[in-house]
Image (cartoon, rainbow over all chains, first blue to last red; front, side, top):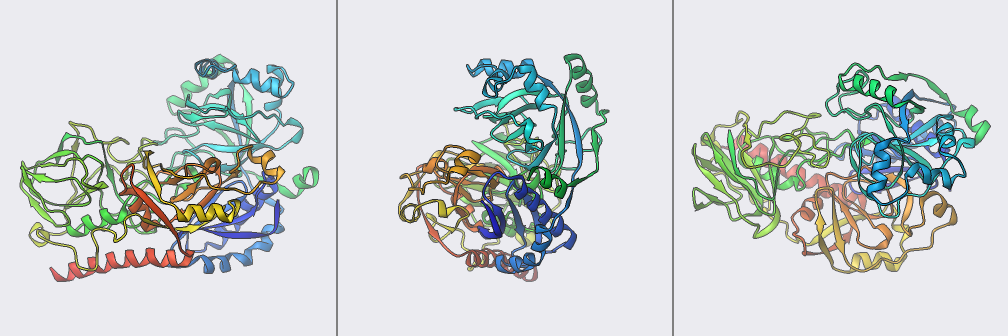
Length: 272
Length: 339
């Protein structure tokens, strides 16, 4: 559902959530990010942190300076701007991936399940080669960063390149760092080794989280990707992977990231 | 310096935590019971520990000690205070009072045992523990391996540096809590919540059950989440588009923000109260959120302890939170002016 007017919900005593709907629809995320931009432009001083999710903007506020009701009143005048949004700031990020890599295969073997990329191919009536072709043929929109440091959820922008698969029935206790995975609507990485349930399709040749930033482009918190970035994954060979990973480890890798603006109105006209 | 002779079950360096990075997936960490650490810092003349996710600086760092405390040796004269869980403290073999600033001599050994009351003890030391700042805080984020001492719990053989005390030890030694700052909550097993954001997915009977029964704290609990054992909560049927977009589980939702204190109920069973190392986003319905003050109370319950939830309004919750913080600040001002 897409709500006519967003619903304001308290999350305890120091968060307020502005919820635009409850389904997995990119339009909701565009509104979330438009409100984030509007709040940043207004610089409402009682807001301590702005946390986008796919369909809702979470706000942590200064309980001394405002209340849930007063903050809601301060946000309401910004809502027309959100409804009429036409563009959003959106960086364009290209990421090298070794698809069908040996670490993902080994992880599947240890969990006694099929190689995940084979399973994804079967779920979508494709060959493994076609999975890679399709996955590298569209941009992905980062709807939200979260779960663990640097992890994100991204959704395909070209609906004709849609690939999906169900999550693991029983989550893995271990996923190697930098594995790239998909399930449901989302493609996402495991920036650090962690449990997980997404189907592993490849391994990134670059870091997305550097707690002690080594490479250019990382902010002080070490998290490279933000909500509203567009990702384009490209396939690299094992030798290319090694070369890139060497550069990343020695802190001399130049990430392929450029500032850009996304034409939301044009996109919605075509796909909305 | 402090030498760690025995580490205890899980002893970590904590302060008020690091707000500002939730949108990057980084939780605040910091003391699970901020009020207890704040009392200790108040007693030894340190800067106060603020509630999590506030705009205040994180205050001086102390130790959070889970279930069984460490044994520590002090290399120089200092003043310490123990608050939170009672771990039967002994200073050079003699029982040491809690909730009081106690001078210790160079070479003295502090031994802490298994908890007799509460689950997390706090040790404040004049000048605070000096570990490198990570994103403006010294708090240990255990699951992310960041902050504190090497991003981990203490081990035997570790050495901790101390900061420079703000007040002379003669001034603070012997200090006790003012009457209006209770060392213990009056009703430790009554946990206040604000209902929502997905309480509407539960039937009225489901919400009534949630607020009506006694829940038991599961041993599968840590600073990320505390699991509860109790009855299944009745849910409404979800519309077909949510089954498509979010998954087949009865409480599956399209991912949204999980606040600290958020109570997820995967499948309608075993609610999980998110701690200060919470995952910042997730896809299960949250029936309610524990208020900031009572996150500390939750942190003082031992596995197997029983608790009840009580719903209050969001603004009332905000005012309760402010009142506690203001009482701490007022006590700090009085002590500075008085002693």
